[in-house]
Image (cartoon, rainbow, N blue to C red; front, side):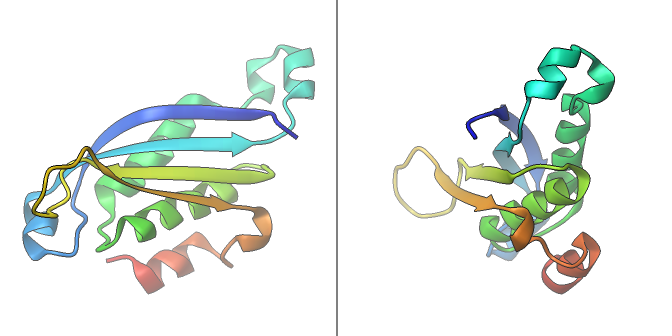
Length: 135
């Protein structure tokens, strides 16, 4: 299946990073999500009540980026993927998290992590996953 909903270039201010200063001062993070699902019935119905609400997806991502704290952007991406798998009946979720100002000590455009998760990869509960890995 090639159907997907893509929300790109969401920008949030979060408190994630290996260094304590990153978690205290915070910085900008950019996120893309792809929700893979069959969109035929939604397209045929042409009914917003049958569709995935983009505002709800944005809000779910925003809440995780701005309210949780992780040392690794890999963990941040995983938390987003797990939340989206919980909220929506999808075949797969792709999450990209970019950290434009990663403290690497050199000139670079951005650091990006991309993960793809399917329902079989879903944690027992998002709260259990966050409790184990989030701060």
